[in-house]
Length: 253
Image (cartoon, rainbow, N blue to C red; front, side):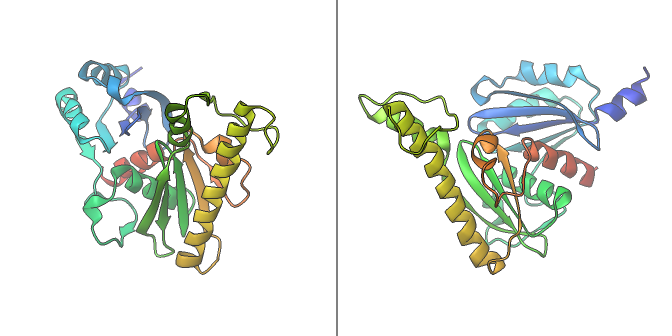
């Protein structure tokens, strides 16, 4: 296989550094090829260099919300060009926000992805360490967001702050009324969290879209569990942020 063919198959190494996990993907300019995930605390120069050696990489595209980890990328990249996503990066969407530099790079990657893949207006619900709602207007501009505690943060708080409540492995409850402590907690967690998501989406629709329904795309670790039974969510895209990085890589070629 020639070098040029290998490079066309894996032009980019995409890296999404979040508070809990770092996601990697090799990608061509048209699709993700392979994704992996590690705890962010275990991100190392050696690990990044291994990822670079796995495929021919012509560019690294990164969104990071953990600034102290960014130096690891710079130490690992060598001569490979690096694009750190920020408000000055070409995104394919505008920004209508009072202080653009305060927007997380992952928020911008989500906006780029949803606009390109699903169209506007749109809302991205990202189920991560926190759950975030990114709002993109019909004019293809990022106009704001909502942030709330993540599902695991809420359930772990109960476990950590009480003497008798157990730690949960989250799954779909069988009933709303629990017949055990664990079942009662599961019901409160899953049904209650869907209520939180439903109410925030309703408020956003009223404020930004006059009650009309925009595209609503869910992503992140608990997207399947929470969003799959919510008809107001249009689509579930597990790797939306990484897709956004691929799209941004193309726009900033």
